[in-house]
Length: 520
Image (cartoon, rainbow, N blue to C red; front, side, top):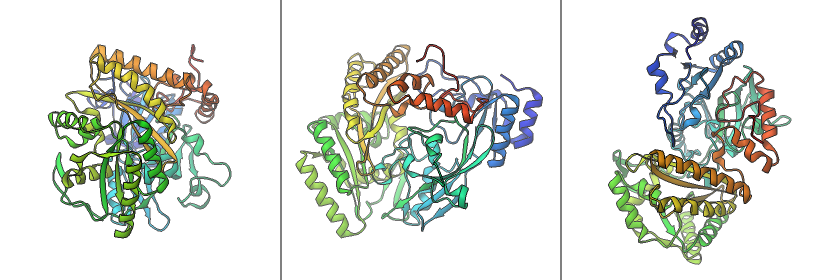
């Protein structure tokens, strides 16, 4: 729906004529629907705005309250949760807010605006012997911790996940107030996300990010971590044929498979307990093949090769030593754990050229696009959650049976029905997902929707917990899970009503202020 000319002009006065558009071609470029959909393009935004700073974001929010128009802010965006929930929604594309504001080496944090991407921050940190968490969606995504959905990534073993990395935050509320959370509000410094007094982090973000449903987070500090690798990785070649010219000193890569999930989980638990690993990532062999292959043909060839060489489920391990002595100790501990849990190394990936490429892609996290859009037009989707380590595996085992049924029917790509599971923060938390690849046809879309509904029902009936993928989906899903999880939906809705009484912050990926009829 087109904006009234006077309203359009009011927004134009804020950002300038070059930073707002309602041109249909521009609007369509923002309406692509990502995922199993019958329509490629969805609802258009009423207009696209590109604010340059917090003051312009605040002004846009206040205009939306004045005119009764919704807004939706996003940075890099990955998925349909960036799409509008209705016809009168103003898009705030935060791409002009792309500054690394501070890297504090002494106190181990970095302050970023929303459009700083993770590899941009990581490259600057590595020059200083530091590193950061990068979400599993890829290094091309925002480094801003509130933009990170649930926030887990391949390096979660040593860099944890989003909710553990958030420090001080600058927040423009849905009413247009600027709130400075944690030490920023009391001292003007970024080192702490809590206090003085009660913390607001549980209000602004919970199990997963609010996906634009409760205002705009314009700046945030994130924890950073020690990096023992080189300041610049020795990369050669051109994408997709690129890899390190050599594996840096004190780095080690292996992929191990196990007779069953029981041994795999025990190995991951013990690796976490010993705190030896830089990364433990639960790739199944289909994902490993996608990470290695530079084409569909290579992808399938690797998979067929690997499925003949493994015992069962598995994961990859990267070690990073702080010294030759530390490195040798970590290798010996790993070898003992793998031996006692009956793990077997996948020999082809021990090749230094392959191992080096996988190390780099796992640190920069460049593989997610390959996994999700490979296989001749296939699309991948994930359904999973983050729980105390080990609990998520039972859910994945159950959902995998549903997946295998669809594989038998020829609806999904045959990847032996594997799922992926990996620990965060040295095993304090575990995360799991099930990845599905399929060609978009009416039959496959209907089947995937049925699969998702069955998996959600299974999570409730068997008390497997609330999947992280719930956030970003239809808001009524919270009302389905809430009664089984301490009525969190009631409290979430009350917070939405309190902070967004005019409901101007688009809640299509969060929760609506009013409960929908027929949902209990």
